[in-house]
Length: 165
Image 1 (cartoon, one colour):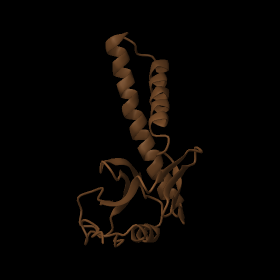
Image 2 (cartoon, rainbow, N blue to C red):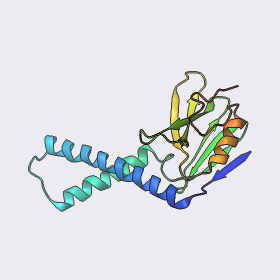
Image 3 (cartoon, rainbow, N blue to C red):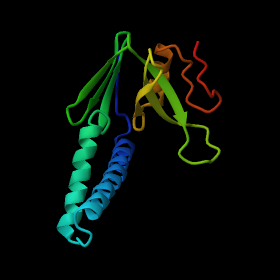
Image 4 (tube, one colour):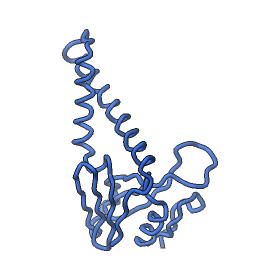
């Protein structure tokens, strides 16, 4: 079993808060316009705006409770386990799900190192169930975990498909 914890806490916190702000902002806009077009077109109070932000936060935490503030991953031959600061633990048995590494760029610049994440994929339907960010966690650990599941473990853009063995 390999347990991976946060290595770069400021980078991790910035990433998590950024995702939270964007998601809550978008959800609060949905609640804002849904209320305006169905109930009261002329509402314009600070309480209303705070209420839509709170609703957005609650909705996001309910929908993505196993994704926000992930602080620990555990990988073994039997399961992939994800734990969050909120106390949520999600387990994916490897008999039904597989680890699929993912490289991506945040900007279209020539960069050698990729932003890392991984998908949890259903082995029967080949559908990606969740995507978990690796921001704040060690790239060396990402390589080791990728190798553990049969990938070469590259963290740069030389290898587009990770060349699964």
